[in-house]
Each structure stands twice: as C-alpha cells, then as structure tokens.
Amino acid sequence: MNPHERLALPSVEADLVSLDDLLAESVIFGDAYLDSVTTHLIRAGGKRLRPVLAVASATRGERPATRDDLLGGVALELMHLASLYHDDVMDEAEIRRNVDSVNARYGNLIAIVAGDYLMARSASIAADLGAPTASLMASTLAWLTRGQVAEVRTAFALTRSENDYYEAIEGKTAALMSSSCRMGAMTARHGARETEALAEFGRCFGMVYQMRDDVLDLTATDNQLGKPAGQDLAEGIYNLPTLFALTDPVGGDELRQLLGRPLDDDERERARKLVVATDGIERTLAAAQRFVDLAASSLEDVGGAALRSGFHSLITSLIDDLTI
Image (cartoon, rainbow, N blue to C red; front, side, top):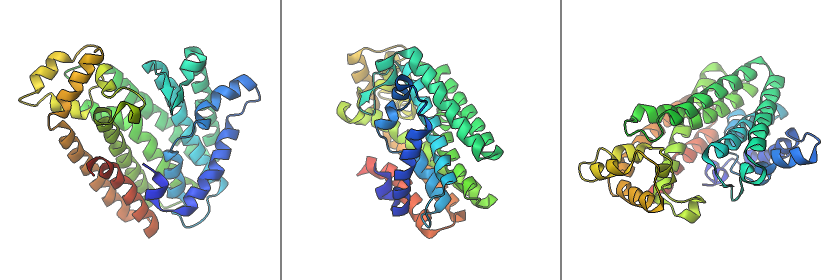
C-alpha cells in the first residue's frame, strides 16, 4: 500500500520529506555507535503511516505543515520505532524492513536499551510541544503496553476470544494510529468535535490495518511477507481468521488438535492451509468492513473535503487490496 497515492494530498507528501530529516536529527546523540543503532530502522525506510496521519490531520492538505505539526509526527514515529525494537527482541526476529533487525545486528541488550532511548526522545519531543501532548503520549504508551500484555497473555490459548483479539490489536496497533490523528488535531488546534472525530478515524484505521496484516500472514507469500506465511500460528498468536476457523464444523476440530503448542514448518503450513480452507478470512474481512463504516461516519465531522476523501480512500484501500 502506498499511502501517498491513496491519500492524494501532495502537500502532505512534501511535508514528509522535511519530517524524515527531523526524524533522523531527533535521535542523533553524538556517539557514532549509538547513532548507528538508533537510526538503523529510520534509514531502512518505511511507510511513515503514523506521521502521514498526524500531518494530514493537522493540515488537511490545505497548507504546509508547521514545525510543531512535523514534530508531533516525529514523536509518534519514534514511539512506533521503539515498539519495533522491543517487539523484535520478544519475537527473536532477524529481519525488519528488509534489513537485519536491530537485535540480530547488535544483540538483544543493545536493542532494548536503544528502544528505551527512542521512547525517551519521543517523550521529550512531546513534552516540548506542551503538557497535553505529553499526556497523550503517556496514555498511548499505556495502551501499547496493555495491548502487548493482552497478546502475550493469550499466546497458544485455544480459549482466546474475539474480545481478547480486539483488546490486543486496539492497544498494539490502533492506539498509535488514533493518537497520530489526535496529535495532528492538537498541533493544529482543531476544535474538540473534529479532534475526537479524527481520533476515532485513526482508531478504526488501525483496527483495519492490523486485521489486514493478519489476513496477509495467512495468504501472502513468504517473499511478500519477509517471513514464513502463517508465522503467527507457529508463535501461538491466534488472530481473528484463526479464531473463526476454530469454530468451523469441518476443519475446526483438526485445527484445534494441531494448535496450542509451537509448530514446526510442516505443521505451520498445514495449520495455515486449514485456516484458509474455512470462511475465517471472509468473516475477518466482513468484520474489518464494519470498522471501515465506522471510520466513514467519523469523517462527517472532519473539516476539509480533500482530507475526508483522502482518508476514506486510505482506509478502503486496506480491504480493496485483499479482495481484488
């Protein structure tokens, strides 16, 4: 997904060039070794979805971003990057954004400490923007932690519920997206009603974004994913398509006998095929569509026709990419 292509707000794309410079500058400490660690994933690129949401929410694509608008986006991206550093340690990941993960290159201890440093820089930037933005970032970090705990708590659990799943992805993914939109509204000083509407759009966008990723984990190729397809199954993370598949009257029992423990490569592929053979993916896309509809309703209170159109195109593309 190319967010700029779907958003169709050229000024936001131009703003992100300036933001990338600020992003790299914000983590330079002056120590060559530490700087190489903290900028590792920044240099590897990425969609910069959270800054895109923040800057677009602030400017509506109608004016250039202010420095505060850009710094708000930087604060969110640094928190996101910090979470990736920590996630890769927990997952023992070796690749991130088509390069060595930080833990694979520098070791787990350095990855954890560097992630902490990125989190501290995020908090510092938010504090410089004012007490409300600092409070927003603290709340966002709490949501991230809650989501991570919710996921770990139900690892390998065949009793994981849909509510467990939604709680985990709202914390791990949707909270950052929601806070990105809220941050943009705050730096631009939009009214309270529009601020809440943008935050709700971001929450829905994050929910759909994660549900899309969970479908792709089962349906995309290893090369597209940069990891084995069905890896979540092997690691005991039973996402919504799998939860639906477990209730299938034909394949559900066989899948249940296979899951509940770590899987080797052959078992992972067998489990993946069992899930794909059910209506789990179709039901997940239907659930995602409900969040798309909620997002569309929230946009009614957002100013700027171009932004409303761009945000609607951005979220619908998440499902369109899976159904074409």
